[in-house]
Image 1 (cartoon, rainbow, N blue to C red):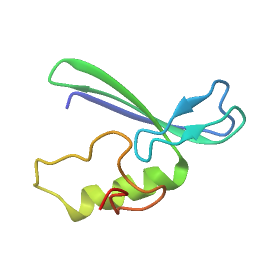
Image 2 (cartoon, one colour):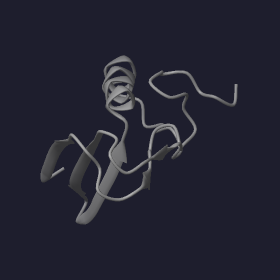
Image 3 (cartoon, one colour):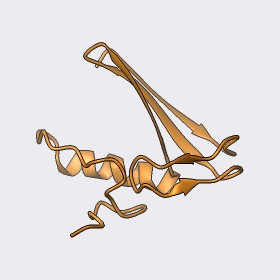
Amino acid sequence: MSFFQVTRVKSSRKPCRCYWCGERIEVGQPKTTTATVFEGDFQATNVHPECFEALKLWQDENRGEEYWPDEGTMKRGSTEDKYV
């Protein structure tokens, strides 16, 4: 990974979907945006603040595993899969 940036936004200007849980982030709600360049490809994600904390916890717990949760498949603010 050649670039990684995390931006905490206090009030979203446009509605978007949370990458972690798939729920909408409405205008005015806080969000965390990540931007990365991985193997030459730019990637940006928007997540709820509590989902960002869950994402960091999941990464710490699963260090070394190649599996990455599919977009929108996790419970909001949790490391649990919502389809289990």
